[in-house]
Length: 162
Image (cartoon, rainbow, N blue to C red; front, side, top):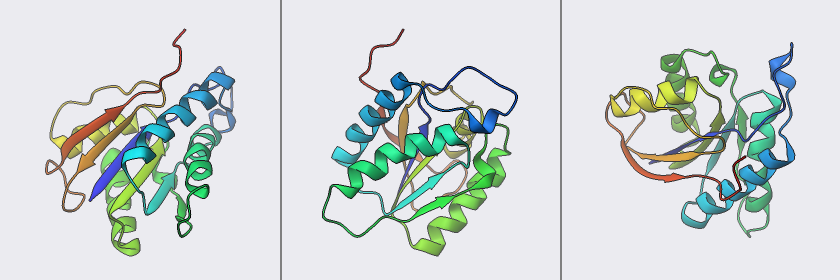
């Protein structure tokens, strides 16, 4: 199975309520670029996003492109345990449960630094490594278990960085 971890695109400056920050126009372009690259090679059967606005806006790029294909609708699950300061072990356990429930073979997960870097580190049994904005990394494993994944690919948005 493939687990594709995606960091959200560029968001507005920090504010008191971090959960409601929107993507900037560049962040929207980043999300679309990454979604196009990922969906050219992978066919997800489950989408999972953080409840934060910027993660859902990034996921919207994947949903928009998937809706253009003649396929069954891919379910979207909003997961509270993948917010920026979430426990990466709890997050991976929740992803594993959802993968099993949906019998998913290719999952796209959109969430945040720092949790995404720590989840990737646990999957590979390596130190966490930061993700660029809207970067996607593809992990292959028979099931979501710590240290048993192999990183297959990385996709970064083909959008000018400022």
